[in-house]
Structure formats: C-alpha cells, structure tokens
Length: 373
Image 1 (cartoon, one colour):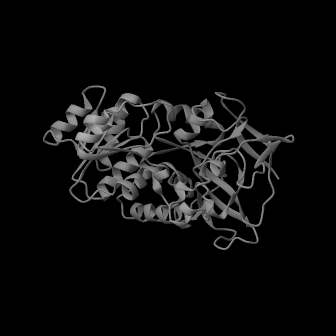
Image 2: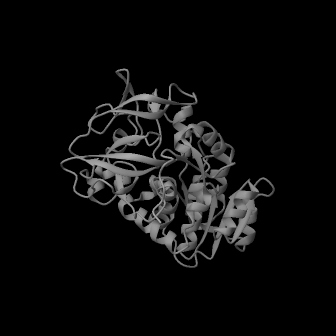
Image 3: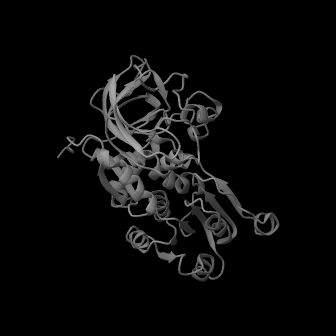
C-alpha cells in the first residue's frame, strides 16, 4: 500500500514529504490506522539530529492519533471506526510486562528503537529499500500499521487532533509524578523546563495535592502559562539562581521532588541541589549530556535519590484514559500548550518546537477531519 510520509534521509537532514512510501501488509495482530494528526516531540528531534540513533533514512513520529481502518484476525479490542491514540509497543509477555511495567519491557529497545517491526520485518520501504521506523508506529504518515498493544481507544466526542501527544509527552510528564514519584498532599515539587512534558508533570503535581508547585524556565511566556495551569511559583533561571530561589520559597529546605525535562547538565545538577534532605530528582530528558553527582554529600549524607523514568512508567491503556478524565474535569488542560500546523509545515513546526516558540506543535495530517459535534 502506497502512503505519504515525512522522511529524514540522513542524520541532520530536514523532513521531506514523500508520496511513494510502501507500507508493509497487515498481520493478524495488526491494526491499520488512518492518521489524523501527530504531535512533534523532542525525542523526534533527538533522532533526527543523531543524539540517539536508530538508522537512516527514517520515518519519525510517535504521538499519533487516528481512526482504525482495518484490524487483523487476532485483534480483540478494536474495530474499524474506533478513534485511537498511539503509544509505544510492549511485548506483554516478558517478566516486567507481566508485572505491570510495560515501560520496562525487556524487549523495549528492540521493539521501539531498532528501526524495524517487533518481528524483525521492515515497516516501510521506498523503491525496495528499507526506511527505519520509530516505536513500531511512525506517525508522520497518512496511514500506518501498528500492533494492538500500541493502541489506546479514546472517546469519539473529543477532538482527535488534540489527543496524539497524550501518547508520549503528556503521559511521560504526568506519569513521572503520578506513577513514580507519587507525592502526597502537602509535598512540594519543582519542575525544570516547562515544555509539554514539564507542564504535564507540573499539572500532575497540582492534581496530587502538592502545596508548592514551582515552575523553572528561561522563557517568560512559558512561565506565565505554567502559572495559568496551576504553578504556585515561577522562576526565570536566566534572571536568578533557581536553587537559591527554591530554597528561599521553602524555608531553606528545598523541595521534596524535582523533575528535569531539559537534559542540560547545569539544570539537571540544579534539580538535585534544589532537593530537601531525602528528596528525589527524576531526570527524564532524552539527552547526550552527563551530570556530576556528589555521592558523599548528596546521595549519602542528604539521602537524595536521582532516578530515570521511561515514558512515565505508564500503562498507556490505563493512564491515557485517566488523563482524559482529568481533562474533562478541567485540571489537565494540555490543549493550552498546542498549536496546529499543516503536514507540509513539519520543518517549521519542528523549528518552532526547538526554539521554544511553540510548546507542543501538532501536525494536522488529515485536514478534512472534523470533530464530532
């Protein structure tokens, strides 16, 4: 089946829209999805520029939303016409999956970041030559084929164009707080970087009952939005020392939890320094940068913890519907971070994401789609 897709030919190249891409045939466990929209995530950019490498040429995109067109013979939970958000693939059979931790699937890397489908076959080809895929999804396409485990059914009365980023950015940020850090009412949290992931973490801190929810960034407009979405305090770290400011706001103690979404060495180290004794810092950015941790003072004497969290330790089929319920209640206003772009504006949208001009770009792949009234 011929489809249209945005292709990165080699490391660092811009996206090129091509209409001669061959999509692999469906298997018995597969779901064919007509793509309506897809968010652009910083992980897409990391792969485009080579901070993380799957292979080239590649079709990126992993925050897709669309409508089911066909299902394989073994598919049990979906049918044509269903509205879905796409997320990562987990095998559902390894020890960690069976323990309820699909983000720690023992085959996570080979299933999502190897450039081929979980069974080792090519997802996409052009003139017989392989194109690498991402997350067994590659949502920068007009049609894709995924496994049932990639799919999350969503209500048809919601605007599909807005929901795709729930599959990665929003579930990663919120899940880091709700599933991993698990603050109690009255705890305190600071989030470094108020992009989509950071704002999701910040809103989850508010939902959890944190009495201090501190947003840290260098862009004033983002900090204003953070306050609108529930931050109790906003710190521009370009103008003041964020660690000193956080200490001042917390009676010189520091916060119970921090989340770093920037991947910048100095910022990650600040997120550790800003902790209270016994505090936990989650570093969740896709980055090639390293940090220097004082193991004696920070980890031993102050009993701090530094953890990594993949995809918010989420179970997408549970966590995405939960976020939708929060959205309906008006406490998780993720749509305020989004801006729509046409599919052929993908390079502009990606540049706007990188510069901070747009928090969450969303590519409208099917411009004929209209939300149900």
